[in-house]
Length: 444
Image (cartoon, rainbow, N blue to C red):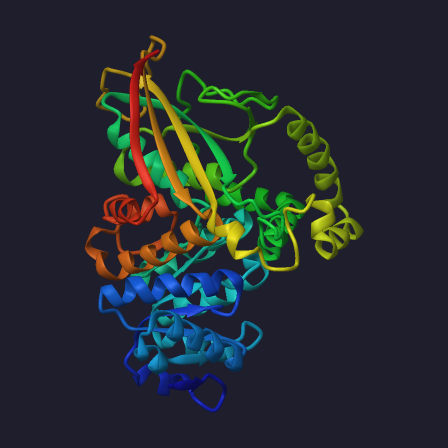
C-alpha cells in the first residue's frame, strides 16, 4: 500500500511533479467519510478514475481500507494511495491538494476548518466539493474565492449531499417540466424509517455541531450577503408568502413547518445565478418539512425555542455540544448512528410549482392575471444522511471531472444547481435510487 507522508520533508515543488490522482477523499475516517468510501470505490472504479484517501490517522485509514477490501473482494484496494493530512498543518493540506484533480472534503465543521482546504485547492488549481450545509461558510467561500476559482478554471461546490442536491436539482427538474412561466415553488420534506430498533441516533454529532454553530453566528451572514448580493433580483408577483405558523400538509397527512436547513438559501443562489448568467426568470421558493403528529409539533415548537435561545449564549452552546442526546430528545448522540437505523431511513420531497400556461420572452416581465397552472414533482431516496448524501457527493465529483464541457463558464464557487444543471447528474442520481418524478399537472 502506498503511503504518502505529507509534511515539510516533501516540498510543494516535488509534489507538483507527480501525476495527479483523479479524486482524493479527505476525512475518510469520519462517519460521513467512511460511508462515502464505499460509493467512491464503486463509482470511480466504473469510470476508470484513480482515487486515494486522506486523513490524520494512518492506522485508522489502513483499517478502513482493509475492511473495504474484505467486503468487496477487490485486491486493488491494497494499492490505494494514502495521504496523511491535517487541517492544523497547512503544509500537509497543500501537499494533499497538489496531488489531486479533485478533493472530496468530508471534514467539518466547515465554518472553522473548511476554508483552509478551499484556499489550498484554489492555489493548486484543484476542484473541491463538500457536504456543508453551513450558510456562512458557503457564502463566504463564494465571496472570497469565486473570481480566483474562475481564473484557475476550477469548480468549488458545497452542499453536495442531502443538503441540498435533492431540493436544488428537484427545483430544476420541476422548472424543466413546467410548460409556461413558473412563478413559485413550495417544497415539503418528509423523513421516515422502517427500522424497528430503538437504539442509535438519527443524526451524527458533526451535523449537530454545524446546526448549533450556524444559528449561533447567523448574524455574521449580514455583511457577507450585503456584498455578495448587492444587486437585487426583480420582485416577482404575485409574492409567495411564507407561513410562520404550522399548517396542514397540503400533500398528505401531518403539519407543515418552515424548514430551517440550507435548502432554500442554496436554491435561491442557484436562481440568482440562472437569472444573471442565463437570463432565466428567477423562481420564488419556500421550504417546509412535515411533522406527522400534533403532539410532536408541540414538542418541536417548545424545543426549538429553547434550542435557539441556548445557541445565542456561550454557556448554552457548551451544553448543547456536550450533551447532544439530552437536548435533541435522542435524535443526536456522540455515538455513531446505528447501521440499521440509517439504512432503513428514507426521505421524500414533494415540490409544488405554480405559474401561468403562457410563456413570456423576458425574464422579468410581470403577469396581470393570477397563476392558472400548477405542477407537482417528487424526489425520493433512502438513507438521506449517509446513503443519498454519499451518492450525491461522489457522483457530483465524478461529473466535474468527466463532463467539464457541460459545466457553466470557466469555473467558480457555485451551488449544485448552477454547476450541474446541464450535466447528466440528475439522470445518474435517478439511476442510483435518488428518484425524480413528475406526479401531475393541474389547474389553479
